[in-house]
Amino acid sequence: MGEIMNELLNLLKQNALESPGNLAKLLGISVDEVKAQIAEYEKSGVIRAYQAVVNEEKLDASLVTTVIEVKVTPESEGGFDRIADLISRFPEVESVYLMSGTFDLLLFIKGRTMHEAAGFVSEKLATLPGVTSTATHFMMKTYKQNGILMHTGEGDERLKVSP
Amino acid sequence: MNDSKSLRSRIAQTVRDIPRSGIRDFFEIVSSREGVISLGIGEPDFVTPWHIREAAALALDRGVTSYTSNMGLLSLRRGISKYVEKKTGIAYNPEDEVLVTVGVSEGLDLAIRALIEPGDEVLYHEPSYVSYNPLIALAYGVAVAVETQKENGFRLTRAELEKKATPKTKVLLLNYPNNPTGAALSKEDVEEIAAFAIERDLIVFTDEIYDELTYDREHFSIISVPGMRERTIYLHGFSKAWAMTGFRMGFTCAPPELTEAMMKIHQYSMLCAPVLSQEASIEALKHAEKDIAYMKAEYKKRRNFIYASFKEMGIPCIRPEGAFYAFADISQFGMTAHEFSLKLLDEQNVACVPGTAFGACGEGFIRCSYATSLDEIKEAMVRIARFIEKL
Ligand SMILES: Cc1ncc(COP(=O)(O)O)c(C=O)c1O
Image 1: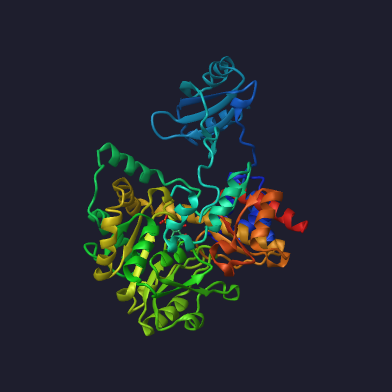
Image 2 (image 1 turned 120 degrees about the vertical axis):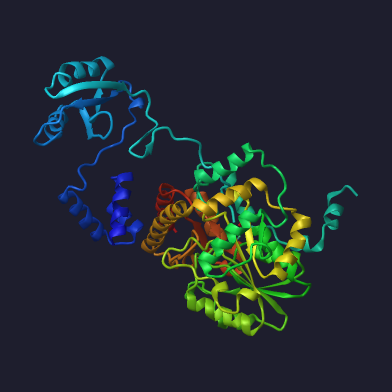
């Protein structure tokens, strides 16, 4: 059963809108079992939210994604948690990760223009006590996001009917 | 001389007698249409795993472009021998018991031509893969179809075999997991068939090309039954589980005498299998376990889905246990399988293959392949449900 439930999560990660009926058919379990397990995942926080994967490049006023490496001075109590939490609360900030290696936090932020993103860094981020340095990268093009290819390639080359 | 009638009369009688393939007929109709969702495709929708393609590309870059030994590269035959032993517990000597062929297609042809003399009878079970009957006919053998029953889940039974066996029966040709029914055999089923073959002193050809693709239990090969190795030609290949159809790679494992006999034909008709495909297959045997597990898990979900969908629609279908086909019983709609398939294509743009393409006893069934993306399968099932509602 554990394996089937893992599959359920994988299927939802691919398509959160998949109906309980279809999920039940795919996994060979009942609709009620699917619904109960999803409710359990939502309650326990395994599933945090359902979102659309948007191809920003297709939008007229596409947003600029900026990736920022941040070095911070860890605090004696709680290490990086307090400052990471503080940064996470800025609405511009989409994701925050604690990293191993040459810097400490990795941020993804979305802004309307590069200028706006640069403003966030100089005005809000760099001025936070504990932040010692930042390196800013602008994202140029998205090929794949959340496991989804953003540009669908060539079609099915197979013969339409074969033995 | 140049009128086509007289040309036709010069074509060998055996070839003239082979009917046009039902698959080809249907293919031509489907190809003339746009936007068809096809459940008629008998090959994986996955591309060959990257590292296997890379192995072929690397071999090409290294300038590996020559013939190989007739039998195939020894390192590949060693890999095949190890693979088969791991799956079945039966060891074949890579030096003289393993032959690399151009697909299982060639392996079948070799086995049949090497063993069959005019008038020899070959038992095979129907519904079956399309090439068995014609290949036997081309070798002047007598193809004797044993009809498997939906009541038995299309599993071959000893009782059915007994009814069709005669003193002229020389070979029994098996294919489980089965194309087109999706049936698989249990160990007990296999043992029963093996006992029949031993008692009748038959040679067995076993086409186990789908052996990796079973969804409810491990495949059990007939060569693992004591007394079978010495009377069996085991046929397998890379087309299905490795998603390598276009590489055209297969192999046979059989006692030295039988391998040598097949080799004689192979060396003159084929010389050897393509070297780049052989190089790719060496890689396939070394590192593809994860790829196979991934593809199998995908097929399994689709199998579950397609089976549950037919059930919901009230279309009887045995639960497919292997390969990637569901064989659905559409006899309640009062049409032949061909009529049903044509009408479904016409009204809903969904293609499946009429069961009769796999033998007369496939009447009343359609074969639906689930080697197609889940999104397409979902849409196809919606359309089929809509279609039968109006019947
Ligand atoms: C049962 C069976 N045997 C043999 C083959 C031929 O496979 P290959 O690509 O190895 O020639 C197929 C292909 O569809 C098949 O379904």
